[in-house]
Length: 387
Image 1 (cartoon, one colour):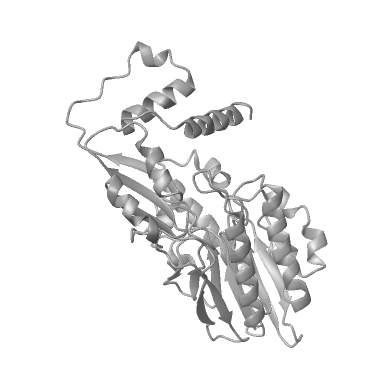
Image 2 (tube, one colour):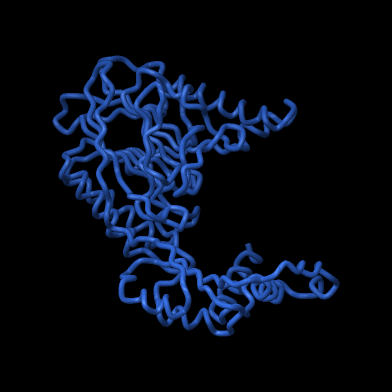
């Protein structure tokens, strides 16, 4: 049987106020085309389908359009909830979708009650058992650990509980079926962001690679956005996100994993397939004149810009945006001296939130925030205040 592993779509997530629905649409179309061309039996979506627990209608339409694209190709789909997904909202259509061979799991279940999804091959000659582990909120374990002592024990207890769940879900696996795990969780030692810094148990709620069940032919994970294979007792990988979602993901090549496995003890064969739909994110730095000279080669990339200058220059950010319309983050770089910042005094305590924001921005960047940035802050603050 063949599978396509993807996840961490975060459909609906903007970039510094810029909508990206067109990019998500192209990326999902690309993933669907890969699934059809590879003649996979099922698509495995490892959580964080949406970026928000209340996604916009456009985001939901893109996801359901993707699922509808699989139906005439007789491709099944297994979806687990991530920490960005609303469990009940994601499960609202689960019963209806199950009749279409789209299996949605938003909460942990015992194996016999949907915790292991059975997926038949397209020709009906083979069956896969997929143990599904939606995101388990840390509080569900930590609340029970508050009487146990130091905080470092909470991480170990969380890892122990997750490992237990995985064992319970996979205990019934036999060599007669293709056996997979699909989950949304963190693994100690996996890499995060553009840098190579690994995660470590004790700073994350996750599990160690050794706690991955052995004898499973493939473990497909979501939660980390960097595509990567993890050294574990069974073949284990994060497919990563569809597009570069923020500047921590710049220069990452986005991918999906096509997995081929047969019943028995042999591990699955993995093939990484690159995606090309998303716009690239880049850092650029220079004087205003140098940045203007870069404009012709900037293309459609989103840019984080550092402007070298001798000091604060009113209106400089607007000039940069005129030269580089896709600049979504602009920082001024100039000598600021070693003089300590004045301590917050009574005057700051008397400012309202908008005035505090403007004062903070002015101290950090040497200039007042642009009018559109101030308006965006006001809108965000008002929305947060009324929740």
